[in-house]
Length: 155
DNA sequence: GCCAACGTTGGC
DNA sequence: GCCAACGTTGGC
Image 1 (tube, rainbow, N blue to C red):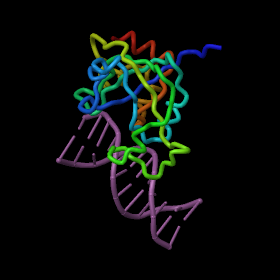
Image 2: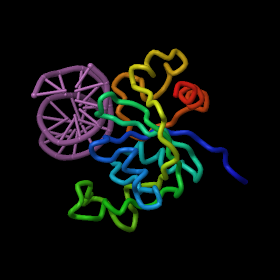
Image 3: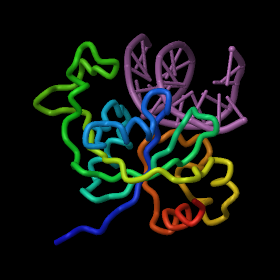
Image 4: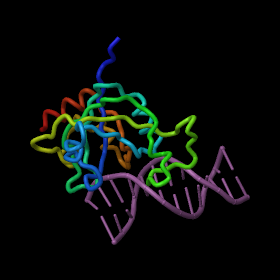
């Protein structure tokens, strides 16, 4: 039984990995590794192939939703947790029960006009967005179908 | 660069 | 189980 497509938002600092970087990646696909937050991991675990992702540039000027990606591979063990040289190495993660997971996402498109954070804040329909809640730092978060539709109407 | 908000760690 | 200390995130 095909599952219904779901919507998400993922944050990335463009100085580290931008949407353009994704577009230039082999097969325009990348492994979304390095996530070390349980809530974010759990959201990735619930993703299915075909889920749509808003690509958000954080720590950017301005912070903004810049385009769309999609999930092309469901959650699997994040290899960086076992790599001693990796910044995200986790010595406490047991390879037989990996603690951290990742998904693969693929570039879909870049908006001709990105939607800056302050514009999102002005939209009454988006008041409930996880992204806009005070102190919200989740780097992987759900987006409701209504929020998704409304954001796409802004680009 | 500042700093508020958050998540995690570890002593007790 | 509490909570202070610490490290990180990310807007500004």
